[in-house]
Image (cartoon, rainbow over all chains, first blue to last red; front, side):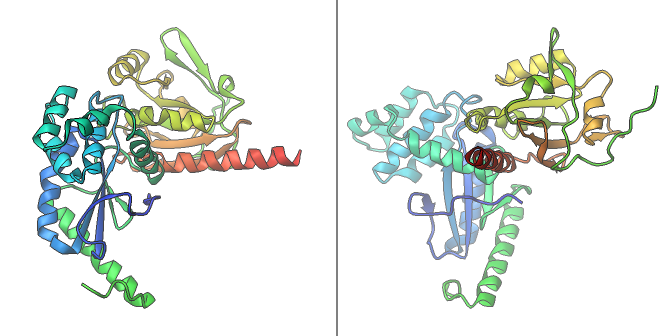
Length: 190
Length: 170
C-alpha cells in the first residue's frame, strides 16, 4: 500500500487546523482536467468536514502532457510568497482554460500582487520547491493527477463527495482509536 | 518440439529474467540482452490508450529522469502492435520504448507469468531487473489501478545500495 513519504509540515500549503483529526493531501496539476473536476468536490468536502479536516495541496505538474502546468505552479508558489496561495490556487482551477503566461500575469494583478513580485514567478526561484513536491510524490506512489492521500495512505477510490466524506470519517475514527490505544494525548482534543 | 512451460504466477525476486526480443518499432527489435549492464524496469500494461492523466505510461514518462538518475532504463510492454504503439507514443510524447508482445501474442508476458488468457492482455505488472539480469522486485497491480512508481524507486535504490556495497568490498 502506497504511503506518503514526506510528512505534512511547515513547508506545505494547508487549510484547516494542524490539530485536525484527519488530513487530506492532494497532489495536483493546475492544467489537469481531472483535478479541475475534483476541485469543487474537494471544496464541498472541506465544507462538510469543517475544522475536523486539514487539506494540503502539493504540486505534481505533468509537464510533458500539460504545457502550462509548470508556469501555473510557479505562479501559485509566487502568490504563496505573498501569503495568497489559496487565492491563486482557486483562481487557477476556476480558469483552467486560460493558463497562458499573459493570463497568469493578469491574475497576479487581479490578486493585487505587486508587479515586481509577479514578474519573479517565472525566473526559476520556485522550481526547487515544485520539484521537491514532485519527487516526494513519486516516492509516495502518486499515480496520476489528482492523487489523494488520507492520513498518509493513498486513496484510489471514487472521488464523489459522499465517498470521500465517508472515507475521511472512517480514517478519522480509526485515527482516534489508534491514538487512544497508544495513549497519545495529541488526538483526544477536538 | 517440446512445449514450453510457463510460470503460473508472476516471477518473483531472485528469478532470472527470461530473455526476450520484441519489436519496438516496425524495423527495430529490442532484446533484454541489449539492456544488460544497467537495471531495467519492465512495465507490462493492459493496453495503449487508457484515459489520460491517470495513465501509467504517461506518468512514467514524466518520471523518466528519476529512473535515469538511478541508472535504470524503462521499457513498456503490451500486446498492442507496433503501429498502435507508435501512434500512442507520439500522441503522449513518450520518451522510452514500448515493446509489442504481439506475435506470438503475449508470449513474453507468459514467460514472466503475467498473461491473462481469458482477456488476451497482460497484467499490469512491474519487474525491476538488475544489471546481471536477475529480477530484484516484481509487483502485479489490480488491472484498473495505476501502481505509481514508489515500488520501482525503492527497488532501484536497493540495487544501487547493494552495488555500492559490493564495490566497496571488492
